[in-house]
Every structure is written in C-alpha cells, then in structure tokens.
Length: 190
Ligand SMILES: [Zn+2]
Image (cartoon, rainbow, N blue to C red; front, side, top):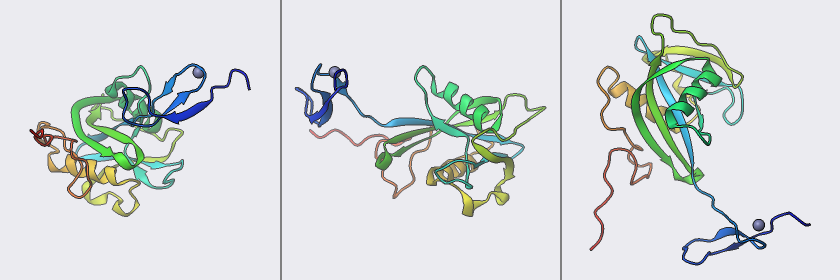
C-alpha cells in the first residue's frame, strides 16, 4: 500500500534495543515510557478524590491525574487534569512523589496542591468523573481506591501534610523502582 509505512523490528546501528524501523525511509518509532501527572489536592485536612466514570477501574476513586500532553509542563498538565476531572483550579506546593510503574511503562509525577482560591474552594465532577469529594483521612474509601500509586501518594501526603515539602518520595519498598524518588542511584561499578 503506497504511503503506508512498513515497520520492521530491528536494532538500529549504535543502538542496543530492537526498535520499529520504517523499511522505506528509516524513521525509527521509538517507544518510551509515558509521563502521568496528578495531584493530591488538600483543603482543611481533607483530600480531593474523583470516582472514575471511565475504564480502567470505573467506579473506583482516584486522584485527578492523567497523561502529560506534548507542549505542557508537568504542572500545566496536572492543572489541566484537575480541571477536566474535578473542575478545580489549583495552586501547587511542589512535587510530592515520583513513582515508576515500569511494568506498564509509566512515570508518575504527583504534586501536592491546594485550591487556587482557598476562600472559595469549588469542585464538581468533570466528564471523566462520576463524583468528586473532599475526604477526611479516616473517611477515605480505601477498599475502593483505583490504583496502588494512589495509596502511595495519599500516604506520602499524610506523612507530611502540614510540613514544608521535602524531597519527593519514591515507590515503597517491595515495589521495585531503584532510581525513583529521593533515593540516590547505586554507585557506579569501577
Ligand atoms: Zn517511512
């Protein structure tokens, strides 16, 4: 079929991995992890959660988060997702966590955030949410949380909720991600 690229799996010169390479023009279709950006939005000791109206994990609760788009900074992406999913305008404290979900090729940047107008915090379900709410810690629907990294981000928020942000946390022990978060990479071999 003319004009349709025909990709073949091969290791390009100087590379170490198989890539999809166009047989006609040599274009290499690099496939790399994707960046997810999201926020723990807190107000008066409560955190904002969205009940998903879409798959995956429809009906379960999550943070406002989604894939970073080309042309966005991580904060811009997180602000856009918060508006799309929860109709919230955000102000950011900083980066709360960096989580690596290597199994599905994701790096997640989770910010700690507040309502841009704390005197008039407003939120509502956007098109991808069935419901949005502010939850006190002991009212969080733990059995209905959509993804493990939502647990991790909420735990990181809870551990230092009122304090200035330190270095971002990484994956918890047992959820391998040797280079994420505040942990330094291992020393280079000699
Ligand atoms: Zn081509």
